[in-house]
Length: 350
Image (cartoon, rainbow, N blue to C red; front, top):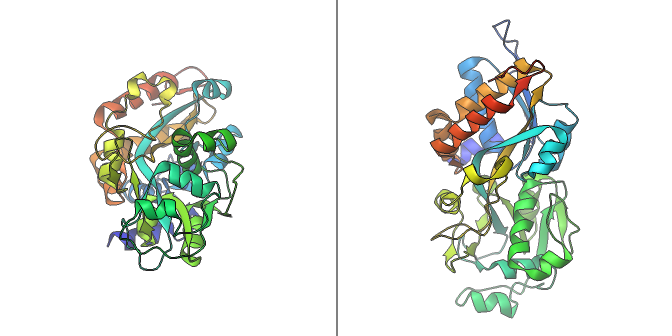
């Protein structure tokens, strides 16, 4: 049932809700663009919220880089990015950011005879594969970690994102933490100069490439792996255990997050300590202007995410294996809305 729900949500890269005219004269449909990482839950939230309020949301799943550009250009009511902006970057453009849910990148492979979760990987091994240093699946470094697993002599095809992507940011931020060579040669960002492989647009494009190419390895947000019934790999955590990517391991990674001490809510959740913590976890963020030229639109955006933080929104997030934020964090976020998002006269929008 879950895969059927996600299939319906991810069948296209852009969604438009609320095309029909609202019955209320004051109803304002809202627009956003950006990260593909949270696309499944934003789609599900928008569908439920439209049914409840008759207010629609047009969300374009174009990647975090595109979402940042669109909010900077003021062409949408909110931008969405899995790469948080630094306090300095936010201040430069008069923006603020707040997280919505926590999820994770998972490595996915196309290998005959290998079951989901059976293949084990470490961070340094993933970095070497993406650096193009390890080119066959039966390489001794992979075999040593996977004794008893029948590894083919197949060539490895590396698949990465071709667009500016927060999913990529989470992936390469993690690789930069576990591989000094990766950090020195490639680094991190929503886009990097990939040493090897082929690029797909969006999580959808990466998933499609991996499914079509025998011997491929890629990285996608977990909901996309579920939807496509893809073979995921276990990854060694900071504590040394081999962990499976799922809602519980994402929750474990987020357990120690102290949002109250994060300036501008700038917090990265990769390579977190803790038992069963998934090392490639991350929050996804909404970007909005502090001074709103269209306060009515901004008010509707905040009402939408206010609802998303309720038990109804949390339940929908859980069905897609995202981790809802705890109540103390959503209270902090709402306080920020009250204090910082204002109209041109200085009046609070929320």
